[in-house]
Image 1 (tube, helix red, strand yellow):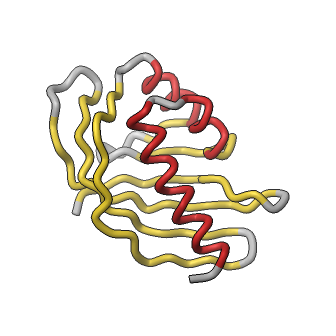
Image 2: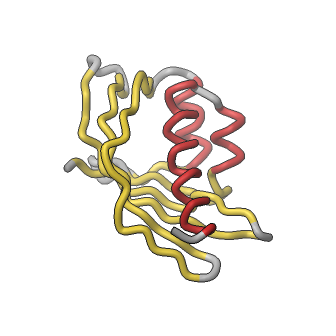
Length: 124
């Protein structure tokens, strides 16, 4: 694995950890300013709205267990991977559930620093 590939994998893992710990400042740092998260419903959520919902516990990520990281690809200033985690969460007032969450992750390298630029959620 190249250094850049290792960095985007670590960024993906850091995001999952920050979601569970509700570490808003860490999320703000690793997510690009224009990052969007496309939910399984098709709703495209901007970065600040998603962070706000984590902070206000509208989206509560209770646990995230990594099962696989695959399809890692890096070319110059962009990268992508697919991560699969079992995520325990309470979302938008729903009950606690465990989802086999697959995230198609997109990354951009700005001034030598990788950030998450886009996420698309589905199940596996």
